[in-house]
Image 1 (cartoon, one colour):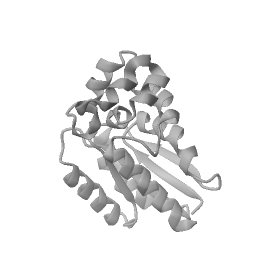
Image 2: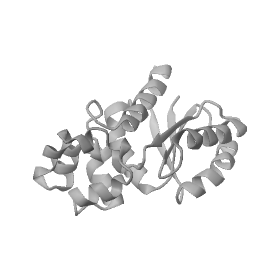
Image 3: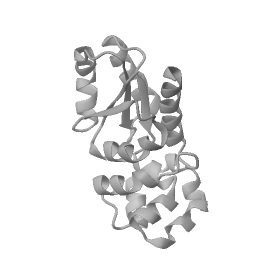
Length: 186
């Protein structure tokens, strides 16, 4: 594999990945980002994009927010679309409930990226020990860090995320999946 292609719900996921991928991807593997205009656009067009993909020696990763849907159902639906497109090996990962769960899982990174400086002390509160369980992580993050904006926040926070110490299980599953794909070709 010389390229890992990411199919993403939106630009925030791209900015976050640009920050974390240098920590886990070898330089000889290029990252390419296909950014959709939301989850409906991703769901509607993923099969067509995969079927049309002709470049060899690539692996694929799909990342989407759970939002208020059922995580298992969403993943099964996206996986079926990938299989139907002739690409059964696509790695599908769901951010439970939103991408901001990843950031709430590492409040130290958020504090360093956008402030406030005292933010990291909240990490040990019960509410933030399992950020994937929060119903509206974006709203929770905005309460803690009023300066947070989705795209610019992702750009600032992504490089600072600790890939080995994050309270978000869905973040850890994403990182583990990417590392597994890299390990399979190493």
